[in-house]
Image 1 (cartoon, rainbow, N blue to C red):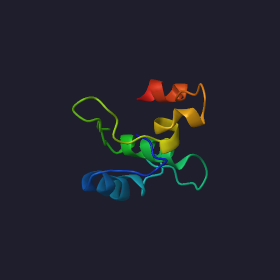
Image 2 (image 1 turned 90 degrees about the vertical axis):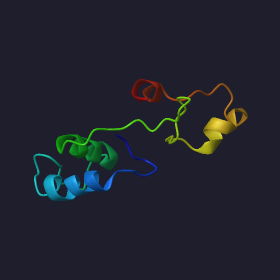
Image 3 (image 1 turned 180 degrees about the horizontal axis):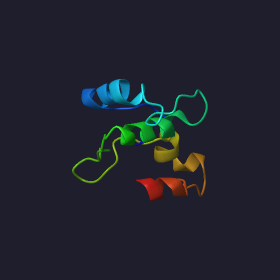
Length: 90
């Protein structure tokens, strides 16, 4: 579960974060420091939310954490590829 451009979650996932996670500092970190997307991902896992796969029926990603120019205009960045972490976590 990652953020960056935003989050998509069900009402039930949001309910769990608010009612089970935020009141319990063992489930959700109570700090303004750190990577908020990683912390929210940990919090969601701690309240039993299972990450879903948002790829389409052809296996293409629907949501990408990159600017459109890095995906559709490769000539703007000669010899560029997507970062290694993306391939490990996709």
